Length: 149
Image 1 (cartoon, rainbow, N blue to C red):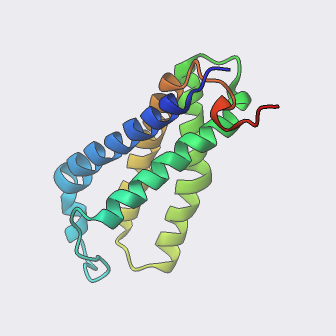
Image 2: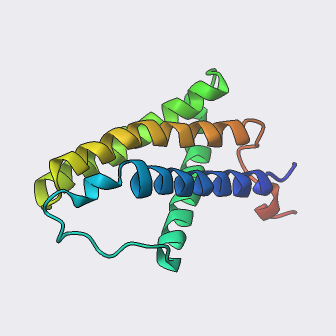
């Protein structure tokens, strides 16, 4: 069996880089004004940090790993539809409930919550598309970790 660990790692890195580019462009640039909306006392000082990058990389790894687990649910679909469908499922099951909880339990401005929810409705399916494209020929399991008899 051919090992696909390299493809999984490449997909993780690609999603990680996409998150950085999207975050810098959108949250740190184009839409940075939403973070000046009251109340502003809920924000920690933000900047590049090891903790931020480690968390983003771990989230990217989990995103790829869960796609590997669920990929059979999208069998028969073209690759780009698999990725978009997976991304929309993650958005609906993860982002939306989290944003509802943020809105209900935290003093974050409604515009910020709306911005996060809508931007993730676009960005997470794109991440799914990246993963589906990079792993389209991957095996279900990696032969690197199988015990040989």
